[in-house]
Amino acid sequence: MSLFAARPDIIHHLSPDHLGRSLRADVRAGLSASPKTLPPKWFYDKLGSELFERITGLPEYYPTRAEREVLELHAAEIATACPAETLIELGSGSSRKTPLLLNALRNEGSLRRYVGVDISDSALLDAQNELARAFPDLELQAVTADFETQLHLLPRAGRRMVALLGSTIGNFEPSTRASFLSDVRDLLGKDGGSLLLGTDLVKSPHVLVSAYADTEGITADFNRNVLRVLNTELGANFDVMAFEHMAVWMPREEWIEMRLRASRPMMVHLPEMDMTIQFHEGEELRTEISAKFRLDGVVEEMETAGFSVAGQWTDPQNRFALTLAAAI
Image 1: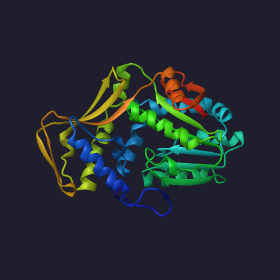
Image 2 (image 1 turned 135 degrees about the vertical axis):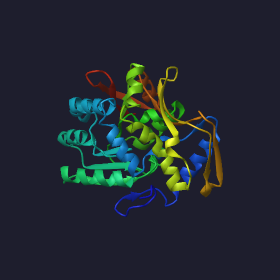
Image 3 (image 1 turned 30 degrees about the horizontal axis):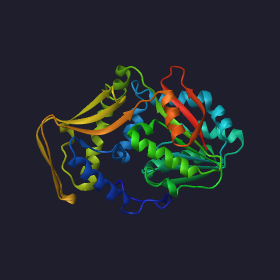
Image 4 (image 1 turned 120 degrees about the vertical axis):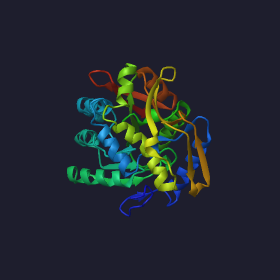
């Protein structure tokens, strides 16, 4: 199924041509730049979503397990600190960890509705089916939207908790991150809303690089999937396997970069965009940054955006943090 095929049982805030236009704009800007870049959101067609789910179960990839541990240990405290009538999960994907938070909010007594927001119809539908069985009395909404630009279209009534889990915030460069946090603050208004933010913490570079370069090669396949998306959606002729997966720790920025390195010279044609892109042997295409955080830095960024931090929790090994902040 194409990345852009709409489903009638999902609330679509994306116009039929929105994703196509966004993809073309990102490709034109990113592949014309030096060095070349592409945003990580284009990994996630159906295959990309399936590959990422496999990554979360790998022994090297600790963030999903660590975040789950935080929720298992502290979800009740989170729900008590900032009760919510509506939980809005941005980039919800499979929503595998979400039931821990839903149970805590429901037990606290306030929860009425869950809104999953993603650009992938298939991930939203799979998650909605699972959650409907587990929470038959909860109002469920599946929404396709680009939460980087369409937060203003999400529910604005009542007390809401916005959750951005999985360290998705780490995919944003600092200036974009600051704008996004301010936009979430504007969405929450003055109704007692809150933001629950997942952040991967700074740790040994060896541990970090291993998490993005597993021995089974699943992350490499996931990284190359962005090229498959361009082949499918734009008629490009990338030789996908001619690109080598790389994961590089950038100590000054304190983030991991995922890159694809051309193993030979190539001319790539994108006929639907009337573009031809040259790759030199060894040239690298950056496909993702994944920033790592320090606890005090997260507090500072959220306070700058207009939040008051209500609590921070980590897993027992201090690998991953959840920060809860109230809009003020």
